[in-house]
Length: 196
Image 1 (tube, rainbow, N blue to C red):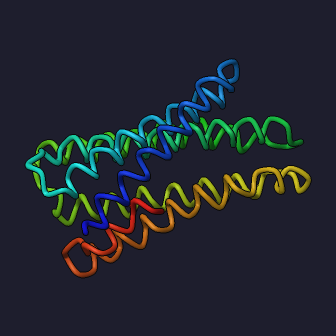
Image 2 (cartoon, rainbow, N blue to C red):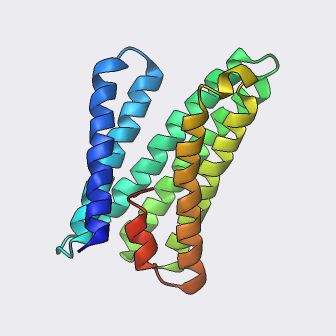
């Protein structure tokens, strides 16, 4: 039984179903459109990972491409939420300045990492794995800042967003830090990543 295949296939179906729900319910708001793009890109990413987990001959560049697109989509979604939360808070002008600076920087870093993938043609190079660790840390930092600036009465409503997205970024940090430390990707962690 191939756990990785079923793990990523179930993630792809779940993300696809979530994207379908968002398509019909949150069409008018910017947050809904951004969350729809996150869910759709994540569904494609998980589908490509399930194909790779099946030991099919498939170029991993498409998987890597959608992994970085997934990070970029999460960054744009979370930073727009951070900007919106900062504009509702009094004295949130410094957060808006940080968001306007951090959004192009984080997406640009992911783009540079993508360029490194295309030029190096190796998923296991140290620079690529260190870049993935850094991308996960950026995501965790954005989640932490979003939690801090969210008013206490709205934290209860957004706790699942913080737990879900924070769990994704925390597991990615653990996964890539382990790969960076031991200079190899742990197959068991990679297979479990679809469930997360």
